Image (cartoon, rainbow, N blue to C red):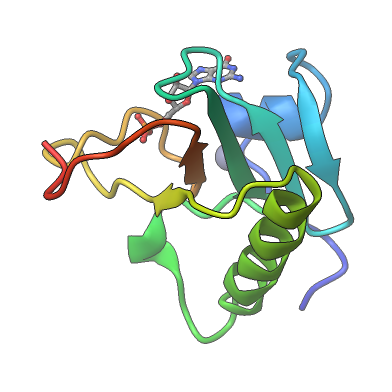
Length: 119
Ligand code: 5GP
Ligand code: ZN
């Protein structure tokens, strides 16, 4: 993995990881950042994102996929620390699936009954 992170200066979530836009931090390390969603869809709703700008799951490659495994380790750790034993992890890809911010992110939702399939 490169030491110099690829960032997009016009990207909302790149601005959040850079601290240019305030957010409510859940967890941070050198590779990823987790913060509460501004418009929560469940009693607990946070997002976990790579610090590197990757547009979505569709932009994951052999060269950048290590961060995705790392993010899932972080999700397992942070949810354990928050005492969450049931939760949903969601990533929307593209407009039809409901992606509104083109920077890879995993929603972590918990604290209420959930329906399947998702709408
Ligand atoms: P998507 O719709 O792309 O799957 O998810 C984007 C998420 O980012 C949405 O749930 C939305 O509420 C959240 N979001 C958008 N802008 C901001 C922001 O400025 N701060 C935070 N904390 N969340 C945001
Ligand atoms: Zn970005």
